[in-house]
Length: 115
Length: 114
Image (cartoon, chains in turn brown, blue):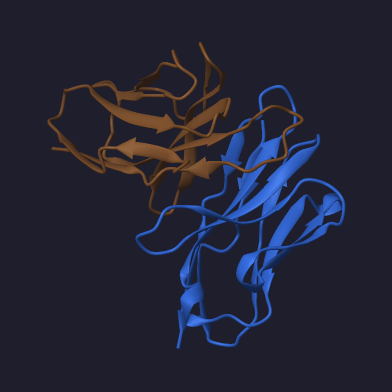
């Protein structure tokens, strides 16, 4: 099945610990995105990557880091510097590019709870 | 920088009522526009999209949206809602420049009463 896989679905961590959320896609998409979803705030862009070995900060990148070593993988690390990490995290991918006319496809999300 | 505004945060309708959800964006260049829906407990899925051509686009489940360039708007409509339309709806904009950031609005929670 083609799609985007996020793991794990639920994640609990102690305050002060870094945690890495996984996102894998087998759609052969160039662009990948990480969003954070909080009630009443919609989806806010954390980081995005247009191509392998390249990524840009989104609107709320502070306290997060990413890597894009492979086309199919775009892991997100929530660091201890993120002041309010408890949230629902969504990964997406698309063919990307200014001449691309396709939508983004989303994973099922990871709900991170920091205690 | 591009941004997206959704005017209604919560909408409550009775079945068979008509629906219109507002979406305005700010970006001076060419854009792709989307409406996504998130049903309770499910992942985000595409409702409809506008890339070019006819500004009135039709999506799944009887939804449609109209792109009005002069108003920077892409409002979502459905003539008669059903209980199963209860969900959260998100408008999104993809700037067709070198960044191709995909930005979402804050969402509208729709509750349809049977």
